Length: 207
Image 1 (cartoon, rainbow, N blue to C red):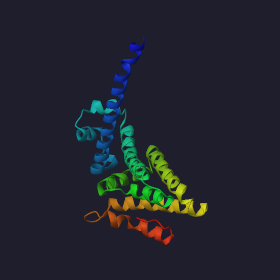
Image 2: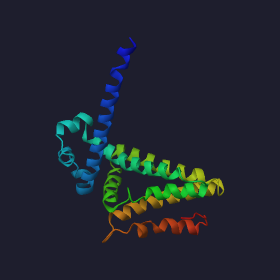
Image 3: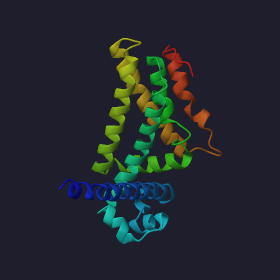
Image 4: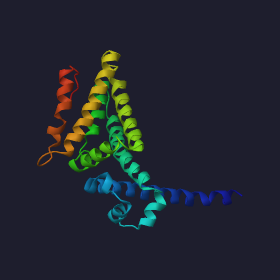
């Protein structure tokens, strides 16, 4: 009896793991397709071609185009979240934790002109697509919460929440500005307004 219950479990876990990997690969392919063609032009056919698999297999993992594009939007946030967690492990003070959250949002691993163009396309679509709007509102609230949590430890709570909201709005604006960056993309120049704002707010965060 013990052997019978034990043997199928690795198989189920393996299938689940492979499915998760394939879904993530498709989300990445969808994000690249949005970078090239925008949300409107990100068809299932183009995503399947980008991923190098059949449309039928795309539909096996994502029932509708809306499901697939929502996964692409969530992927960017997931990549940023992974960066946040990685950097927070090394942070020792509230100042360092705030800085870790902000730097993760503009990490070279996730912040590029191409990714910003995909994000801008999704952001524009959010005005008409409730699913996109829901995801982006969730991302915004989470960033405000993450920043406010540690800002409250170094300044009055009302000021901390206000600054967290301003930084979140500015971060969104920087991503949108990066999407229309003229010439070679300069990440440091693009992000500089965030550090300038922190200096003006007299928050002593050391880079």
